[in-house]
Image 1 (cartoon, rainbow over the protein chains, first blue to last red):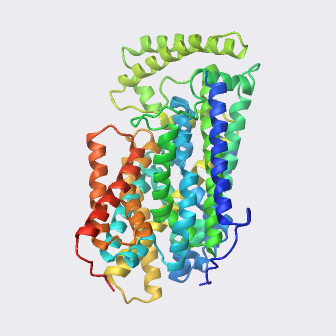
Image 2 (image 1 turned 120 degrees about the vertical axis):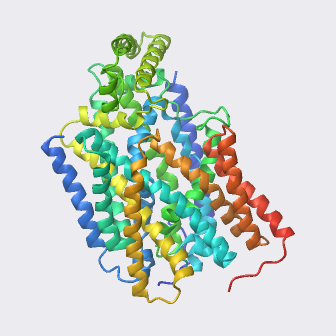
Image 3 (image 1 turned 90 degrees about the vertical axis):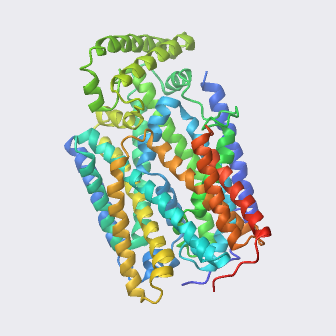
Length: 43
Length: 549
């Protein structure tokens, strides 16, 4: 079994905290886009 | 099914089985068979996690769900990215560092053997019930297309999956998941493009969206809070997050995917990939269902989509009148849709015709004599087999089979792992050789595959299969999630507190299910809250536990 490297950085956003924040922002953007989709087309 | 469709379908299935057998070679130790020697790269785990969750039910039932209820089901996944972040930050490092084979093994290190056994049994019950449904869904496909009995199709599907899963263990499962995910995406895009291509001349994709919108099918966001309503933003964000936490954080069928990672970072990235990709994928599947609805606005759909039920009700004396009412409503709806597409129609006329059409369909459903009649699972398949061109039908069916096989293989693999590691090795035979446990793991995999074949026979009358699976999961996930919350976040929680907390949580969930109308998504919130509250109360009141060495 290979030893686990706990200190690895993520490939994007330099820290895990920033990467998690980016995912939360992405979720907010997706919900906003879906809201626009609903309001624009579901009439 | 034309020869080209058969060729595509058979070639795809053969490729999956042979590829799985080839990839699974060398799985000759327990660690390699159950955890792939912890060598998996992030992209293989990411696609395996996605493929495991995207079952045949996802294709068959979710598209039908969108057809009858619109796209609001996508909100069910809004909490998933939040759950993935929490699991990446908290659970992944703990599981990796402890070097466990199963999530429940960790519970013994944190609490005691009793808590581990309880969680393992809950998982075996819950996942054991679901695996039969996952196998039943593709049987619906062949029942519609070939008229084969369910029993035969479930046997064939089960045998194919068992072949490579028993032989190759998790390496075969994970790498075939990658191929199966590619086939799924190809099939999904083919169905989506074909649904647009089949629109009548003069009806553009934007017109199609307007028609779907007029019918209330384009509703991916519903802000109104209602605890009895299954799908709105709040139930999706909160209930969906708790369900995803339980599924990806406590369900061995998913935990085992990322326990195979070569590092914590690889496991985290595989989960965060799903956090980003899952919602768009579900959106595309639901959009396909909405476009199938639009297609049937212009092309008369059968009054009932289940062929044998349709044949039966046509002999009823009431049927001619129902059919006439249905046809008239269809003609009015089609005329209203054409006017909307031309920019001069009113949604009121369209919706009135839609309501009349729905009423005629309900009347026809009553003629079947089945008060809980539900043909949601047949809608997409009817569209695929009747209207898609040669080759594309085979590709879409291959995608459905790939989805089924990826889910079933992961589930029987994880059921076998828990059976061997948490039950057999822990309680029945502690001193066996690695070769012995490898053999038992293979036998356990075969057992759970056969078990799935038997329980699949009971899937027929469960209505929308996607809801049935999530409902079954929600009855048990709350207890599992609660005990892991106690383990991760409450250092003073004791083994007795965890054990009785889980029992209290499960009692609360079943009480809510049988005595209230609360949507099942909320069970995933109620359960953990009760487990934590009861667990902490017992921990503070009871004497210090005796830890199992």
